[in-house]
Image (cartoon, rainbow, N blue to C red; front, top):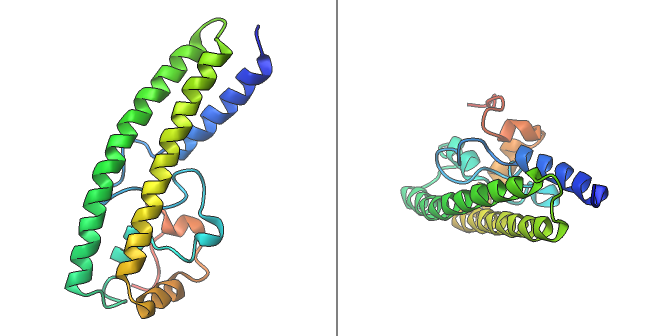
Amino acid sequence: MKTPTLILTLCISLAAIAQSQPQGGPPPGGPPPPGQIGGNMGPLGNLLFPPDLVMRHQRTINLSREQQDSIREEMRRTSSEFTDLQWQLSAEQEALASLVREPEPDPDAVQTQFDKLLSLENQMKKLQLGMMIAIKNILTKDQQDKLRELTKGDRPDRLQPGGPPPHDE
């Protein structure tokens, strides 16, 4: 077998990519929150606000009608672009799987295809970050502070779709 280390590394990477991708497309309302694409946001986690968090607490933070409309528009724009990228990513994943299925995969072809996947994932992360920056810019400082206060001490899984609901509403 040619370059067993490359193939092992590729398999581990593919498993990580498969686990990080939401199944069945983006959840309603836009791209998934941080944590579903490429891990958590680390030190940015309490500085940015996923749309589902803002929607869940819109009354508590006194979100105005104008702010709601602006966030919805940003989510619509981002969701459309995100869906297109997901379709492209899916096609590239299939192409990579096809290459790896070969009895003796060509390491250069596999690496080139893998680079395409990584590029698409990078585009998706940039889109997601841009959306959360736009949402943050729509919120007032007081609203941002209130959201941080509401989520202080939350486990990361509480902010994910399917995680336990917050206890304050």
